Image (tube, rainbow, N blue to C red):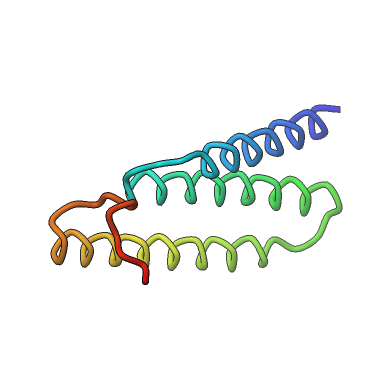
Length: 96
């Protein structure tokens, strides 16, 4: 019963992170933080799922490695954006 409640909490964590991510944000740093929040929710879901069905947890380690790579890539993009434009406003970028 407690595992099911933890699973619902992890789903709510992911859902709330997704809702906040979809909202209109101005800064790239806040967008990156929300992406990490979503990745944390997915990680908790994976851990609970694999422990519920007694699988090996190697996939969770691989998932953490990809989350760390995603975070490092996002911070690299943030630093290069601040060096070229002077701010991290996401809406001031010229995508075209």
